[in-house]
Every structure is written in C-alpha cells, then in structure tokens.
Length: 415
Image (cartoon, rainbow, N blue to C red; front, side, top):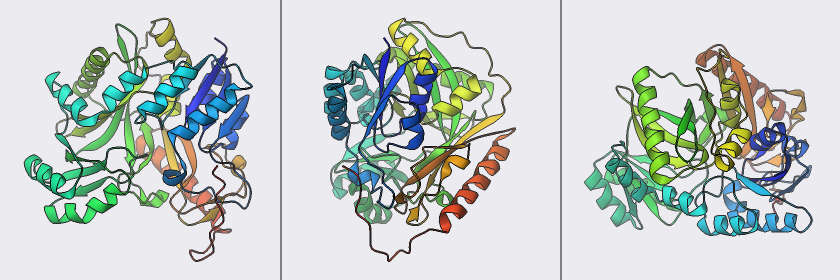
C-alpha cells in the first residue's frame, strides 16, 4: 500500500501525518487550504478558493455526497489503495458505503460506524455495559421533545441528530426555554435528540484499537462555545488542550470505557470518545467519533507518535504500540478561529503556528472557520494564553480589511 486518500471536512492534520509516515497522500475535503495542498499529490475540494471570492457557509455548502463524487473524479486519473477518514462522513451511512465500494476504508466498517452513531440506541447499550451515559431520546416534533424532556427531567440539551462541530445544540432549563430553542435545533436537522444535561468538563478520550486490545492515548479537554474566537454556537467546537488533567481513578475509568466500547462494537484503529467529566471525576459518555479526531496533531505531539502509521498498523497488522507515560512536552492546544466579521484573509504563512490556512485574499463570512492555531507551553493556562494572544494578532491583521455587515455578499466559490 503506497497511495492513500485522506477524506473529510478537515483533512490537513491527517494528511500531514500520512505524509510523514511515508505514504503518497491524496485528499478530498471541503476547504482545500494551502497547507493541505502542500502535503498532497493532488487535492480536490468542494470549495474552490479564489481571492475576492466568498468561502460560503459550511453548513449550507458541505455534503458527504459531494466528497464521494469528488473521490470518483479523482479515481479516474489516480490509483488509490485505501482511504483514511477525517470528520464529516460519520452520520452518512449511504456515503460511507459508496466510498468503501470504490476505495476500501482503513478503519471501521461503515456498518460499525452507523451502529455507534445511532445515538439513543448506542447510549442505551452502553448502560447495559456498565458505562455511564446521559439519558437520550429522539423526537420529531416539539410535543415529542417536551414529553421526552419531562420524562428525563430538566435541564436538558436539545441536539440535531446530525450537525457539524456542535452546531444547533441548545440547553433548556424549562419547557418554555425548550419551546424557544426548538426551532434553532430543527434548522440543522429534522430529527432532534433530547438529552439529560450533565454538568461538568467537556473532554474526549483518544485511543487505538486492534482486534483484541486497546491503547489509551490521551485525555483531551474540549473547548466549546468560545465567543472570543468568533464561535456563535454555544456548544460549537473550538479545539482542544492536550493532555487534560486526570487523576488515577479518572484515567482507569476512561481505560475501562474504551476497552469495553472497542470490544463490544468491534472498533478498529484511531477512535475518540466524547465525555463529560462530572463531579467526583466521573465520566459520562456522550458519543463516539469512529475515525481520526480534530485533536490529532496535539495528541501526536504529546505522545511523540505518528497516528496515521499506528492506525494503519492496528487495522492491517493487528498490532498496537507499547506506550509508557507521555514524555514531558508540556501542554499542546489547538484553537479554531472563526471570523468575527466578514473578513478578507491576510497572508497567514508568516505565522508558523497556524494551520488550515486559506489562500490570502479570500473572503470568510462571519462565524465561518478562519484558520487554526497549534501551540505549546508549560501548562494548560499558559498555552491557552499563548494561543489567544496569537489569535488576537491574527484578528487584528484581518481587521484592517474587514467588510461592513451591510456590504453586498460576494458569490460563493463552493462547487
């Protein structure tokens, strides 16, 4: 196997990992950013970035079907041996099946992915395995949602059954609040999940799985809903800090969770489990991401490993690494910056800590992804301060060319 396809919304970090592992990397993604194209033999993207043109709106312009169609186009002129999954296809079983038919996916089979992404059934199954998870019910109307919330007990979280990066997730403390936020949730998906609200720290667990064993890689703090980063969604994904603080009891609880889930659902390779760490360091499982995660580069840096290589070895050779304690590298953070206003992107190549760099001069709409920052420092608070200082500098650079809210919208360059 020499030629691999990296496919998903956000593919740059995975493409770099596969390139570092020695593979010929091809990519199909949404953004088509500069740094992704630099490490791939060829990239096809939904968005065609052009100076002076709008990058459009991810929720509107993205579709898994478009990714598969672009893969078909790539295969007319390139020989691809296998595919590696980034985000964006998890909740699209038909697209996953089509993709696996034309390029074999290294990792979880589409049926396995579909099984762990059927949220209410999956979480109910976890409780039978002795794993804590929030009570969750599907609803297709406000009446069903209200009844579910009354049975679960307020506060609840209302979620679209499928969305991108936490879009459309709302907390409701009462039936009147649920009635108010329900249209905001259904704008993202016709089916809504009503879920018990678990107060605590949002986190994720990264792990590798082979046929008979698992290796816990790291516990990662999740950064959600940071308005100072231009994120307008209250639960919108803004990045990670790795590693998250963890005592022995929490670490062992997470090890138990990934071992049980991987064995029961037959997971393979790189996977992530989103959790809420409740009072007393008690983890509750919220969902599984059965593919590479957004924390990939931070986890690699903390663990001093190549995740693309380890994933492929776990899936094709049934081998896992023997990892001791993480080397003393401090903390790593990934911050995702969203445009605070409709903005023209400056030249980000001068900032070595930026990732997912659009080409200079493209227009990013308010609230849309602008770029990412990867930074290192001694402690969690220090790396967060470091990252936010750099974010402010980038926002200031973009500020000199920002559009007014009333300026006429340029046409999108999404195909």
